[in-house]
Length: 233
Image (cartoon, rainbow, N blue to C red; front, side, top):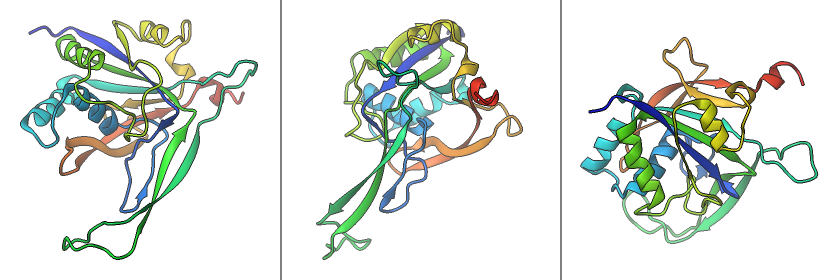
């Protein structure tokens, strides 16, 4: 089996996105960047892998950092014609009133349930999966012709542009695929998987083990800000 690595480049561009990682009961929040669980869930849908199946367990194992697959997320500016400044990412909170729900004893509830659901507006992200070529080839084929629908965290959050941008060998080539030729990674807000606890800046409970039973493991990440912000511009 080949041990060559490459970068699978994805563009997450849509009017709404929602990347839950700390949702509880009726309050469904969103992170400000795509989570590992959200990205892997999208890929499993493209592959047609059922929740809780042996196939899911195999894929989630193949897509771990321990298996050589690492995830990098960068926030891309949404540029507006005639404006020098990109649009800021905003959070939208939607209220849902749901009737016909059941309690823990499977009995119908008389009262409606109000849920609070958050979404990101004006968000664009680049996602790099770095790993073995043979694994990424299968993912790329699934993204070109997904078996099930893919979305950005929730079914209402559909892509506005092709998700798969291509596969390349370097980060410079990956940025070029996203239309950011000549720029470096240090110019973007990034979330990178840390090699050790000391190298990380935050811990997220978003490494999926089983989507059906909603079991997740902690993941250590390093969050970077653009060099322009560090310079005070």
